Image (tube, rainbow, N blue to C red; front, side, top):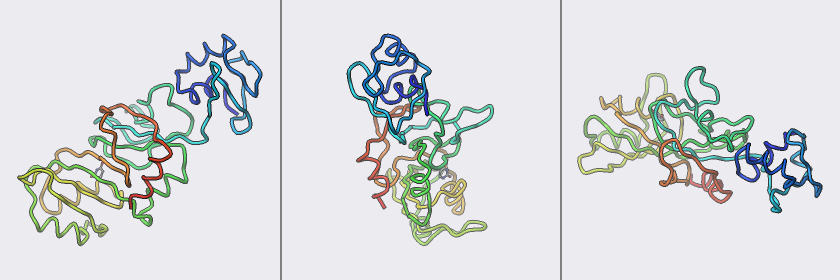
Length: 236
Ligand code: URA
């Protein structure tokens, strides 16, 4: 059971205060009846809703693409530090949202925020081999030995990474595109560190087959469509 203002805000993609205004003006119906009680609770799986004469759907789960800025933690609770969930616009916030996978505090780019635990598990499990693609800016150029080493699986202190793809993005080999299939702690920074290279900036640009929307500025986000969602899992 959820509060009506929250349901309408999420289903119609409007702010909570706009949802309250619509409800108070008698412009919201539940199962065909006008309801003016903003705090009334309804079962979203059983009831149908309209807002301003339009049928609106409350989705069981939501999937959000964010372009994470630096300085924001990939978690749902960060103590005194802002999290990706804290910086969501008010009308996109709802219970149980969390980032499916972590980026370091100083990494930018694609974070997928959802409340669908089973989906998150599927895309994060190393068994499912969903690639994640990053652009890494390095302090020095990398050479063919690094490409080969990444291909063979870099040995870290207590682990061997799965094979990763490394391609140059610029002519002097200081910017690299890297594709990995795991999400180990500081994985890309540690992989380059094995070759005495320092990652000075890191951005995730793709999860599975879905690219970060170039229109999203850092800190901005949007809903992922159903078709896009399939491409996250397909892009193996
Ligand atoms: N690898 C890293 O080192 N950091 C990230 O944030 C993601 C992958």
